[in-house]
Length: 265
Image (cartoon, rainbow, N blue to C red; front, side, top):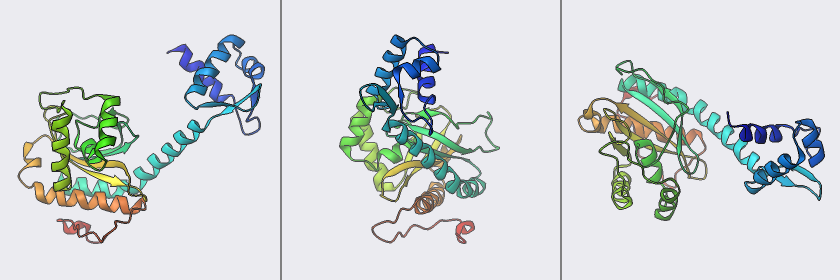
């Protein structure tokens, strides 16, 4: 445990609906914590918008808290609306299916249906991953402007995970253009050896990417043989999840699933 982090969390949880504003002395007394330590932690939290100064001697929770709570709400809403479709997709494809949330720099895995054919049982839920090395992440990057992609890469870097990971921004941009042309992204063992994926972006009511969904398997044929049928089903599911999140495309979508199982949706 990192004590300074725990103390910072304690400061943020000392506020309440009944007492939204507290002085330095009140915060210090209730934790309890020396005033000097409390002051330094408050200043640090203020620099990131988690605490704000109300007047000369009072503090309150900052707007960054609101952004975090909104992200949690969207995260849960996305998972709940996507889960039924993803379970059906997993049943049809007989492969693992994943749902991610886009936080602006990385993707967070928030739902998974693991295939019974996987030799190693594991869960990706809760894992935070770079965008450049997964089909999920690349589908999101392909939906962003070049400038925004470059901004993200500058913040996060492009670390290598396997021998096929793209670590050059020029190569990645070429791959993203190919993803736009296809309508979905491909992961060729770029994050994990023995794992091949197809990924499609999910959008919100404003048309902005908020996450992605992917099909993942250990057989390379998932991105070659039979890819068109699997990709069509994946794209349909991503489109339907986006619709349930309020997205309405500018022109009517012609996407249709290959599997008749989805016809009733």
